[in-house]
Image: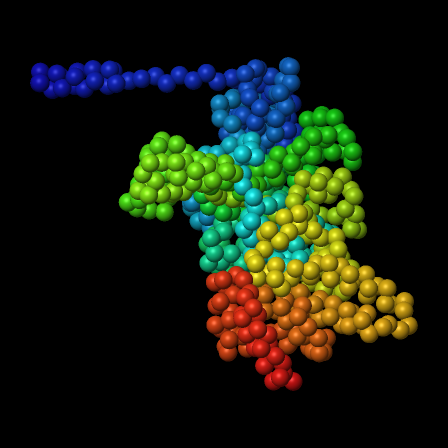
Amino acid sequence: MSDMIKDISSSLQKQIEDFSLDLALRDVGTVTEAGDGIARATGLADVQAQELVQFDNGVMGIAFNLEEDEVGIIIMGEFSGIEEGMTVRSTGRIASVPVGDGMIGRVVNALGQPIDGKGPIAFDHYRPIERIAPGVIQRKDVDTPVQTGIKAIDSLTPVGRGQRQLIIGDRQTGKTALAIDTIINQVGQDLLCIYVAIGQKKAGIARTVAILEEHGAMDHTVIVVASAEEPAALQYIAPYAGCAIGEEFMETGRDALIVYDDLSKHAWAYRQVSLLLRRPPGREAYPGDLFYLHSRLLERAARLADTYVITPNDFKGDVATEKDAVDKTIYGGPLGKHNAEEALEAMDNSKDHKLVELENTGGSLTALPIIETLLGDVSAYVPTNVISITDGQIYLEANLFFAGIRPAINAGQSVSRVGGDAQTKAMRQVAGGLRLDMAAFRDLAAFAQFGSSLDKATQAQLNRGQRLQEILKQPQYQPVPLEKEIVAIFSGTSGLADKIAIDRMNEWEEGLLRFMETSHSDILDTIRKEKALSDELRERLKTAIETYNSTWS
């Protein structure tokens, strides 16, 4: 019995010795006003901006307005149960979302919580939804394309990895379809995708998910949802949550693409939240910091510079860690590789060493924000703001859409400030002057409506433009591989389609691509691998198209 007592006492003694009390200081406040997704509270004297707070009923909120006597809180969830006099506590944690590879293939809300019924998500850690964008020294030039699979985009307004390319146009002109096509085209590629649905109907979001699943695109996609039925607070933070998920991929050395669909509704949500919190309204009742709101979001899209270390020649592996560097030096920034090469050359035993890329570097985040216009008015407040902070825009025109020209891209008003740098050499070779040619064709076609007779040169230009317009048409959710894009555009720009009847161009193009795939797959393989057209390859391609034309009827 005494032994038992001794065992119990020793066990209790050990537990007492091992016991440690973790104390944390937390502010506790009282709700003074609540309603419409907004709450005001007093007593949270030390709360931080963007800090998560928790109400007594478990609902979370974000400290948004830090005023002298009270704090304005946006409620992230059901707000009907929050009343005056309720206790609210600070958490000490800045608003953040779970990130990691476990998010891939899942549908989550603006808080990173799964809503697809597939169980909990295995995530690595939390990442703040707001952060400072990478500086200039951390970036490198955009020179690698994002292959959208859309002929009109890849040839006219190319998108590069790390770029911010705006998709803008009226309602029901195919803006979302362009983004979904781009995501579908990444099947089997190395580009991870995040699609952020802001203020959309749940039925529409469900259709988008179904389309992506049908094409096998959910295997590389994360969908962040803040539907129209959800509080404005969740619609406001949704794009930041999606951006944080994308940044995790970028900062682990991978390439990611994020679609914000759309920032017009995001601006509406921010306006609602701001007005409820009695922030001063500005133009069109939007708060004055709306420009800053979107600029700090889109600026986070970047292509990070590669970082290098010097290792012995016998180092095995494609990437290294900091401890593998023989000189304990990391060479980063735009001139990182150049500086590393100079340091390697200056070493006495340079032949025994080599350059190796540091792990988790050189990733990118490409942004495709979507903006909705009213009657084509791009001079409105929100469109103007977003146009000014992006690297170009893809402008979709309603008149083209209803005329059956889809995607309805206006070549004259669409632009990519990165331009040819975001194209493969093969695409530059076949589509170098295509955008200007298509813009000139539209002007000429409008002029020709008022002319009774046209000279032969003008007629030839119109005929060529009509066929190029038909070639650039593309069915929805059917992206085209790069090599087939090259073949189709080459046939148009080189005049090999000039004698094909306009009403049979689609049939002719489909037949041509089938012919190339079955009889000249070697040409397609070479274009895919080399991404350039040599003189010899160009002649082979021309001969193949001429052979097909001779059998066309």
